Length: 512
Image (cartoon, rainbow, N blue to C red; front, side, top):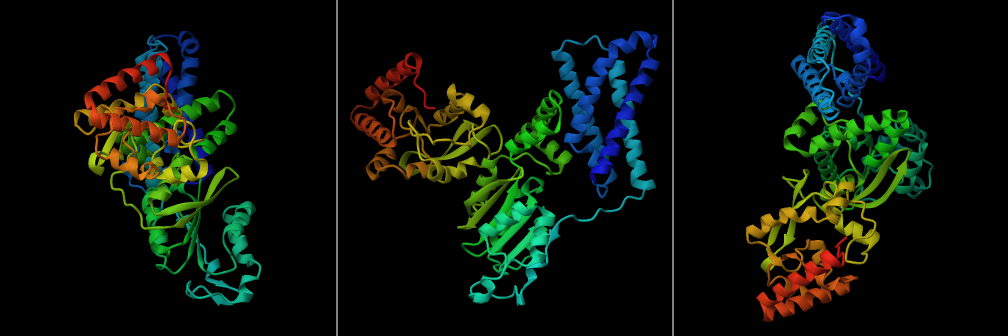
């Protein structure tokens, strides 16, 4: 559905809301002069919430090819969500003196009219399946007389390497994106060499149609925000590329989306819109119950995705990041295939996460924590280390993987409370070295690795006793603890526990 249709539907719904409001004021047994001054301002807030949530859940842009029953459910569920939000606002503002008859009547009348016109649109207008807006460009099929059937293992003719980019390819890229994107692609691949596939699609189907290992580069000019199953899409690209092949993708990141929304609407309104957008498109997907509701309403389109999640998904699907650039509000990423995808069947996306850590005897255990990083951020440890190195305390510098709430959780150790699950399961002890990821573990010396695996990791590490600054200092601190523990286990843990508590309570010791 195009933008004009959405605007028409939105305008029509506003008229319906006002009509329902005046109908309920007319039905209510009193004069309009009594009710209008009391209800007009709350109604305007209600109407604004109704329209904003409807836009966010894409109620006004439901594809016509969907079944009528699904369209009904979309309208009903969206209106129930709006009713819940407004009910919460009434409770928080202690405005329960407003008539439930008026409030409920407006919701009921508007819902019935919306469903009626959905039926009209479906049957009377005889809506048909809309065209697929995805594009598989044919521009790459033939360049300067050389066909794309040239095997990628064979050298290309020297004269082809010095030719300018054909106009048909340039026009196709600029038409779909813009000139800045064309220049970025020119910087990262040779567009005059026909060894790439140029796509603008949000469907995995268009990737699976490509011949396997035929193209050494695949470019997708559609943002991944509109891809329903992002990892499946990335995995399909991985299978089509040879080892060392290049994939170029784009995304509107969470921060870029926030800037766009705040610029698009006037002050106050933009803040309210962004808050509701955050609840529906950032909070809903993180819980099993609301996640299904979220995907039902949005079909996975226009999702909010962070930079860390985007890069993490690429790494989990067998790519490494070679270059990235912000262009006109979107992030373009150049990724290189380095291996097969991990195919994680149970990725952690909700607030309670399980992290694979090395336990006693080198056994991998799942350590429970509250999420402080964006989803899939755990795959970026090596990338962040190479990009930023370590700061004092052994943490990564400028770690963009950490969320705003995550910084608060870490400051007060709230994220580590679920680790008591591992304690009661016998996988951790109260005092001991930190359970480490494989990447972080690889930075340690051979001697420390051997000593670490002989004992259980702990909830309270020796870090809080010695407060080391560098990675070498951290290793020395842990070696010291492990040597003492091997001689006097109970006494060592007893001393370390109280020293750590003293530093945390009176010396403001923090792990950062």
